Image: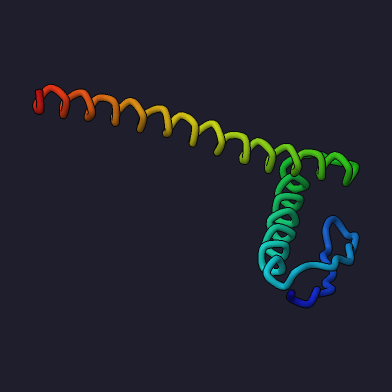
Length: 96
C-alpha cells in the first residue's frame, strides 16, 4: 500500500489541503491549473462580480465537455457497429 501525500491546491484564491495517492498528484495539479486558466478567461470575457458565478461556469464547461465526449463515443460506437455489420454481411455473401 502506498503512502498518502499531503498537497495544497489553490482554486479561485482559496487553498484546499488534500490527502491523496501520489499517482493522483499530476492530474489534480493539471486540473487546478485548467480551472484557474478558465476562471481568468471568464473574468476577462464577462463582467462577473462573484467568484461563485465564475466557478459555476467552469463546472458547466467541464461537465459539458465530459458529456459531449460520452455522446461522441456512443456515436462512434454506433458507426463502428454498423460498419462491422456491413463487413459481416459482405463476408457472409462471399462465403455462401
